[in-house]
Length: 477
Image 1 (cartoon, rainbow, N blue to C red):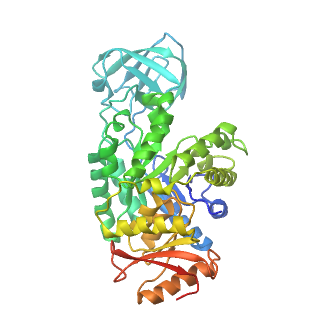
Image 2: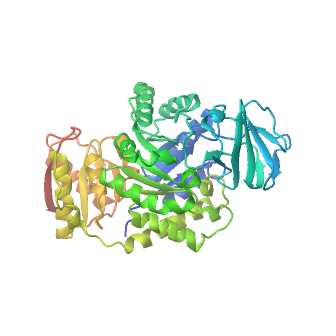
Image 3: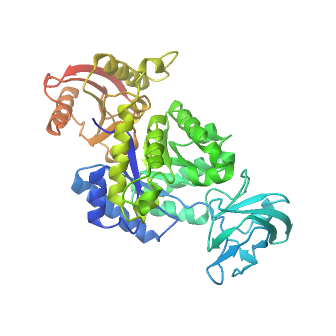
């Protein structure tokens, strides 16, 4: 059985050597995430170069995702590196404080005082520390500690219920987009977008930065602000996919609200023909343990059953002790969850109308494959759109996106149930169809006599031109 759900791995100090990365790709990594919250531009360039080198050695098309840091809404630094806050104590957040003490700390986000009012609840360090605003005076926010604990340098700040005005794109993000385009990152993940407008701006910046390299990335919106939830359809309409970023989102809306929101977001994204990534603490215990907890296994499996295109690791593979084992475990969980899926493709076609020929061909291929029980669906594609549309529907038939465009092949590495490979299409359609069969035969993905469904466009080589569907037996030309 071929795994449909993709795995996004974050690389960092624990996984930036050639051997470890090769083993992670061998274990099932499909997309590599570069976290721009850490490291310098050259670090990311070097890692991207390594990913391309190792992927080529493995014979795989691996996508690279550049994940932008977004606005730094954090406390500053302390004289001693950390303090212990006690329940009921007074504590001041001061935009002008240089170095913190037991009673006061600075702010990276200098505009925070103007965003707050008396009674607002501030959640620090992923919600482990809770402060209540008593008054705001100039640059100072006077609070009382509701839930205490250890507070160390540069920990994050959220307001319960959301509503902070920080722009999604910072000056650093704009420079990081330029860096990402220099190595042709396939995806750019935008942190903390509040509306479709944030995504439009990010896309424009990426397209401009990518123009000298002839490259346009796909844009992923990280849903991690409370105000992004009512704007979700607007954000989806202006993105290529979303990341269910459960960390900051849970802090703002409450842990209990996140599971239902996860299901709703994935459902909306699939309905809008967009990609989905489920992220944050999926295999958290494997930072230090060689096996996941039962709860983590269930979490990953549920993300698969929800219909996620991909599940993602963070610190588990970036700085943890067991990066390869984490990917192996995640891949095994995905496969087991997929075995239990109940495919009801016919229901997806009720009351569906088509506005494009290529979209109707994609649906026709799925319907035919489901009812004829074919071995594979082959999409000869320039842009990857046909394969993307097919991947929005659950079917236990593997989809192979064969494209002459390397960038398309890499982007398709994130599509659920799609395996992408390069194939020249600069020939008459019958020759290309034979070459497609030969490629899958050589890789052992089909056998002679297998029934397959193939889609392509006449004339070949035109983006968005899929207009043909053929049912054939492998070996019949």
